[in-house]
Image (cartoon, rainbow, N blue to C red; front, side, top):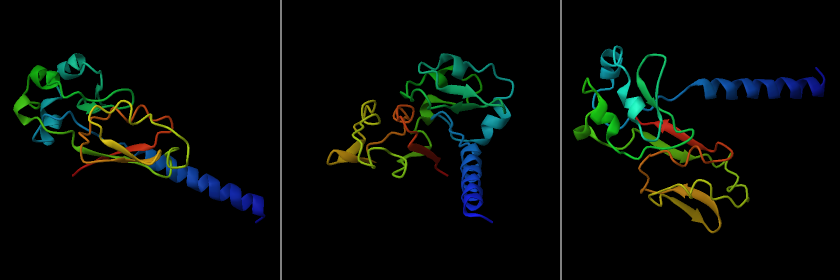
Length: 165
């Protein structure tokens, strides 16, 4: 095998692994539930009022007919409207909690960690939950509410959302 073939093979293998990892979609639910299993049983015949009343339009109805949060453009304001609209009580205001996820900055992808001045994640953060070491190196602090507003604003897709078990 020639060197050129070897590098081509290695780069295609890495690209394939990255594609597979990206396809493993994390399903994040609206922050007003106790029993995740209730989504599968109760949301099947619902008319998706939670999605239509979401002020930020981040609730999408997945292929399984259950509500999921999509942080690609906006975040959750914890406005309670989805819980108020839920006819089957899967979402209830009294069950309000933080979005069941962990927001992390991928230091390998973040351009600020590579020495480029960028504050795209910090600007939309209502809670001042992103600190910078000097002018670079953003880190998420304990003020983070997992609202997701920073995710869609990152120009290099360097903010990951991980489901908390």
